[in-house]
Image 1 (cartoon, helix red, strand yellow):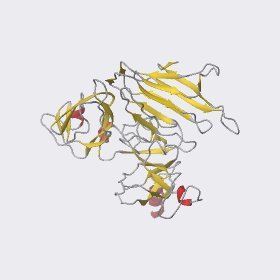
Image 2 (cartoon, rainbow, N blue to C red):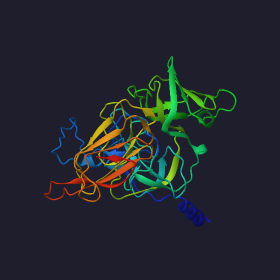
Image 3 (spheres, rainbow, N blue to C red):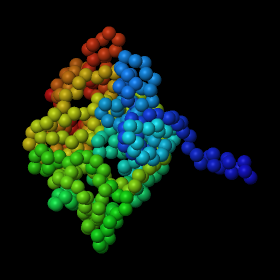
Image 4 (cartoon, rainbow, N blue to C red):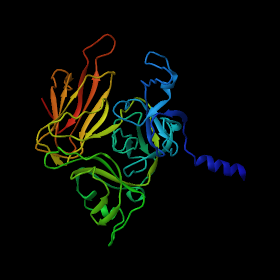
Length: 371
């Protein structure tokens, strides 16, 4: 009988591979959050410099961002409280079957999720990005009611801030947070704001991050005690506590992760090297937001751009330092996006060995305009 019980227990356990790594930052971590290696880690504490062959560089990690998104390490096996100066943590490495912290509903053996390198939800798995390390497939159906409660990703949620209280309005958001016929005070619910800007000019932008929901005041409104969101059109989702999903964490080449950026009137707004950059929308710009895509550094490096919501009047314009269309002869100088679901994908080729003439070659696009 004990052998049978042991067998059943073993069958119920996921196959995983764990590793101890050093987490440099003094912040708390939730179970299932992604971290990335800091491959240029140096420290004055032990006089280690970039010219030293320091092995701790292979164990030092940080939350994902635009500087480390091409060095995905794995996901945390448990919650960790913040420790000043950093701490040792345990992670599941790519190739594992493990639970990931998610921000969107999933369908078993269908939904693909990629780790976020955005400032608002770094380490959480949400939008599908490129394949490889940092991307996973869901092995569990997680309905909205089970954790990820609500999403408004096209910039159509609005907010107004009065006397330090921000009221967010979007059809159904209050109902998702428990409102029926009287004000409710949700437990453990947070609005995860990815982007937002004033609809008039986009000059005033919301501060991305997690915000505790104070109340649901109607079927279509919630309140948050903050002035950081101003009066904006928001890109956001709502979670309760820390929703997780059993997933297979892909190995292979780096996906480059995914990020959401907040375009701003007449301003250069950077996109990370490699991976997927999603441009938030839902508001008006008085002048184009811009970015220059520098030459790649790795053969077969991939870069994708996409629009989450529409940008009115002006575009997000990308200058391509070295670019060709797929025909191999037509140059690309710039491309622009201004409508939801427009996208463009590129691959960097031709800078290996002693060659110096690499180019970003356009692989596919929908809606984007090229010059």
